[in-house]
Image (cartoon, rainbow, N blue to C red):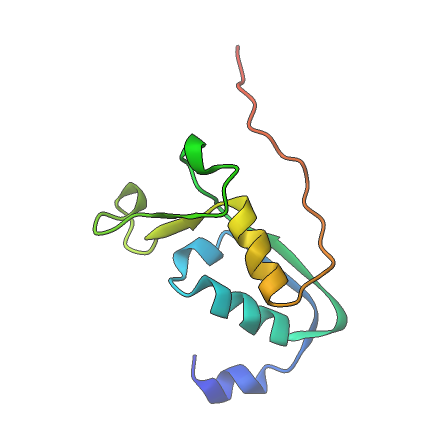
Length: 109
């Protein structure tokens, strides 16, 4: 997408953005671009993969996968922790957000 195409998109009341951020090497810049495309009072619905390493889960860190990428994908070179994502939103001055309490449960049959 060219800069001209991006600018011609206008602004939105709702941006639904799931499963994309961790494929982008410039995650904070991407969050800023999304924020810039929201109308005043608009809503950004956001979901992202986060660090898989247990020791990083409660830290404000980014898990780096380089030179070997995550699961041998060509696009996932780093996974932020939840705290890192929140820091990114605060850096962008996004003050109102809801974080659902989602936990991974083991399913037994």
